[in-house]
Length: 151
Image 1 (tube, rainbow, N blue to C red):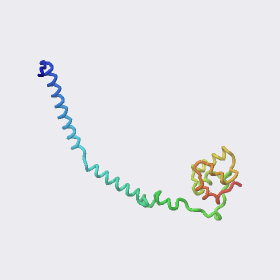
Image 2: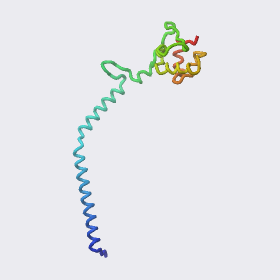
Image 3: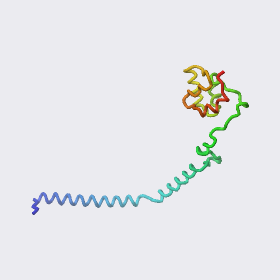
Image 4: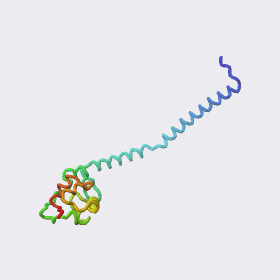
């Protein structure tokens, strides 16, 4: 039924032998790779990862003998309210970056934005105009309202 020439038989035998040797080499290589992988290291790393995630997910993270509040615990009272009668009013138009940065909810970056805004658009007409500065919204303005002035 199948009549192959001598050359065709040699090619077929060569292909079968080559495929067989390739399959055996692949099995040996995979077995060697499995033996080289040490599962102990994986389990050690998994335990370290679990410890770190437990620390991160706890109420506070122990860092250099100090408890640092996590963002979740800060949500309850993110910034303390400041008594406006005890603090001198800060003029938004004339205050320096360091004075502005000390206001609640305003850090150095937002203080620079406030100063850049007044340099570009002129002085604030009302203290509520501070909302026009990028990063300052109603929440921050309500904290600042009694602490700032434009006069």
